[in-house]
Amino acid sequence: MLYQIRTKQLLKIDLKTAWDFISSPKNLATITPSYMGFVIKSPPEDIEKMYAGQIIEYDVTPILGIKMRWVTEITYVEQGHYFVDIQRFGPYALWHHKHFLKEVPGGVEVTDIIHYKPPLGFLGRLAHALFIKKQIKTIFDYRHQKLEAMFNQK
Image (cartoon, rainbow, N blue to C red; front, top):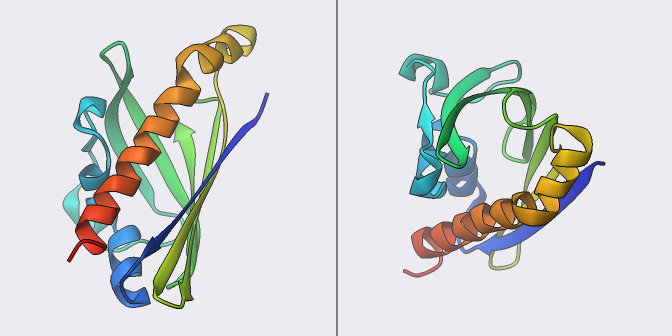
């Protein structure tokens, strides 16, 4: 079964500032909860600037303290407006994440749309009901709070 999550947030900053932060792979660790054990393994020179075709490797500890390698590919980039990353290897059978930025009165609206599918068929669906859905929501709630603190509480 394919699941979807949508989040939306207003950042009270200009589009360039929002894009520079959101599109930088180096900032992912900042907006990921520390318990996830998120560490970028790609060489620093490979993550200076986002581009279509970019491969980014991470270590992440999504469940039960089990470290996993997560490899994503940036498949589409429209500078200043949106980008898409997909999981090539990692904990999900499918992970497709679209990031949209749009200038609106008062700042920039950031929208994330994630389509994902847990692995292992029935067991994955059961795990989704028991903890995966909650964990993903917790991660994106954390991201929302971090961005709020960084850009909206000045």
